[in-house]
Each structure stands twice: as structure tokens, then as C-alpha cells.
Length: 547
Image (cartoon, rainbow, N blue to C red; front, side, top):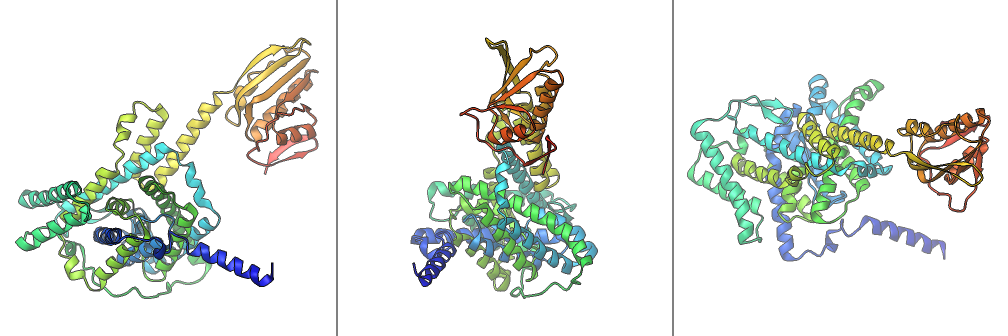
């Protein structure tokens, strides 16, 4: 093949990757009906984004436009290049609560610099394929995550039942205000219930129009037409503004600045990726399509890097708005792009209209999201699943509500891993018998790793065993350096007792290491080929530590 032909082939391949079917709208071949559904779904999401972006701006201690710009830019970029079409990203409370101390102590310019560094860390995570580690999150942790997020969304909506202007910023939005009473409370509840009833009933009549958007529209018309005095979007803050402007954060470019922003950037990057990847999996289960974890990491990173230099507070995937989108029929990138563009239109030209929308309508939409998000079947399976799994579901749910998502997921994974290790540690056992030649055979069953080493050692009685002992590993799995060290220590005991020890059916790598260490190995054609978890070195004939 000619060099020029090779060059063209490589370029064509690269271009093909950039114009993958789920990125290029022209290849999605949307029907007119689906196109309308995507656009209307995006409009519904945009309406739901406004109050949350404003509320989370208050939480972080920044101007509402900082949150709105973040919702627009993060939402647009992740919709275009993210790993899961249909996902919605924007400013979130999980990130806002981390930003509070940074903004209070150092100012908003340091926040913008932190968001840029956060994005670069997320890009690095995607480039090095770290998104694949989301596979380590067990299903009970996912159930706890979903339930916890549903409760958090519900609690965040309760603040809308406070008298406007009396609430203060808190971890999940605004709190500490005076609660509504009397007719204002009754009116608010009535409009919320009406919105929920429309969302529930409309799909049973027609699916030509997104039910959440219909609920918002009908309730807004009633409130405006009859002049009902209830809190509206404009009571939170004015959303009127211009286009986001390019702005390099005005912070000193030195090591002292890095010392300030790096810890925050690392925490924000981790929280953002965990929430985004779990939402990616959840949306994938609903839509029946798989998403690219590493691609989503890169998309979140690019979005936050760009947001940081355009005056935004950064963001990540939003499970509530993502659920609104997929439930409204949004399945392609078009819905996410439409949501971002509608949000920008609200800021530029539509603020006076959007500010008249009653908060009760948006609360009703989010309450329906809560009902649809919460894994109700988890309540019935708690009595049927193993105790450890039930405990993890409840633990992750509680920790998500009490602290944040990242902490809850890490705690859930650690508890699940420890429980798994403990259960497997108890599985190690051996059956013994003697051969015609008088040799005693130990047939090991169960995994041999750091957790089962003590049980493994208790299986043997070197003082009482005959002069020839055979240890069979055909039904066992040697997993780590602790296991190899235990095997070598066992051989040393029999050697000290003047007895012959043979090891059979170890994997090829264990076979090689122990042979070099001077232990008697027996070759077999059916030795397993699995690899141990880490590499090892052998020093002076003794099995050394892992690297």
C-alpha cells in the first residue's frame, strides 16, 4: 500500500471515530415526531434546570448567573460528546457544598481556577480509562445510590414550601426559612398535586406531548390567568443576563495557588465522575443502551475546563433532570443540546416569562421524578437478599442523604468488598486421604488470599503427617502475595520437620516462583493459567514482596 493511501486510511478512520452515529445528528435519522419529542423534552428539562441552578449558586456562595452559565455550558458540551445520549448535566448540589469553603475563604476567582483543574483531572481519568472502575460498584450500592438520590431530591424540593426570602443556603439547597402556613400552603400543595395528576394522567390519553411540560404549562397558565399569589421562579433571583464571556481566572500562577485549589479540584473531580458514571449506568438500564464510561469522563472534563474559563461553577450529571428527559422521551443528543440552548435563551431573552412560572409546577415535576427514581422493589427484596446486601442498600441510602454521593459510594464499595473477603476467607478447607504409597494428600478447596491465609495454615499438621505430603491446588485459586508467602512458609515447616512436600496444580506463575525458591513442584498438563494479582521478585532463593 502506498504511503499516501495509508495516510488517507488513517485519516478516514480517525474521522469516522469523530463522527460516530451517536454524535452526528444527521445520522440519527429522527422522524418528525421524534424530533418534536426531543425538542419538547429539552424544553421541559431546561425549565427544571433554572431553579436548581439558582439554588445551588446560593449554596456555593456565587451569583445565580454563575450557576446558570455552568448549567448551559456543561449541559451543552456533555450532550454533544458525552458517553450516554439522553443524560443531562449541569450545576449540582453535590459539587456546590464542596465549593462553599473555597469561595468564602479565597473568592470566586479561585473557584474558576479550581473548576479548570477539576476538568483537567477528569480528562486525565478518561484518557487513562479509569471510568471502567465503575464496574466495581455492586448492585446493592447502586440501589442505595438511587434511593438516596431520590430522597435528596425530595428534601431539596421541600425548601420551596418556605416563605420566599427567608431561607438560607445549606447542603442540599436552601433551608432555615419560615414555613408556609394556612391558605398559601394549601394553594401551593394543591398546585403541586395538580401538576403531578397531569403528569400521571396525560400519558394514558396521549403521548404526543411530554407530560411534565404539559403539567408545567397548565399550572403556569392557571396561576398567571387568575393571578394566584404563589412563589415563582423570579422570587428566587433574576435570571436575566448576557452571553458568558471568556475570562482567565485572575489568580497567581504559582505553587501556592496550586496548594489551595488542588485538594478541592481532586474532591470535585471524584464526586463529579462518580455521580456522572452512576447516572450513566442508570440511564443505560432505562434506555437499554450502553454508554462509554471513559468517553463520559473526558466529556465531563472538557465541559468543566471550558466552564471554568467562561465564569461557570462547574457541574456533573444530574439524575433528576436525566430522569425527566428519558421519561419525556429524550433518547438522543438532540434533547440535551435543546435543553442547554433553551436555558441560554431564558437567560438572554426569556427571563421575564420564565420568572413567572410557579415553583409549585416545578416541584410537582420533581416529586414525580422522585417517585419514578426510587427503587421501590428494594423495599420488598430487603428480606430476601443476603443480610450484607440489605445492609449495604440501607447504609448507602443513609450516607447519601447525610453526607454526599461520593462518600456513600466509597463506603458501600468498601463494606461490600470486606464482606466478600470475609465470606471467601471462610470458604478455604481441605479434604485429605492417603495414597497406596503412604503419602498424605491435602486437596485444597476455596480461594487462597490474604483473608484466608490463617485458615489455610490451620489445615496442616506437619508434626503428625507422614514423611511424604502432597498439596493439591486444582480446586483452589492462589490470588495474591500473601497466598504465595503462606505456601512458602508451609514448605519451610515441612522442610524443618525433615519431610518431603510436593505442590500440585498451581498456576504457571506460582509454579515458576516457587520452583526458583527451591520448593518441589510437580508438573501437570492441566495446571491453571490464571495470573496472580501482582508481580513478585525472588531474592536469595526466598519469595520476596510484591511490587
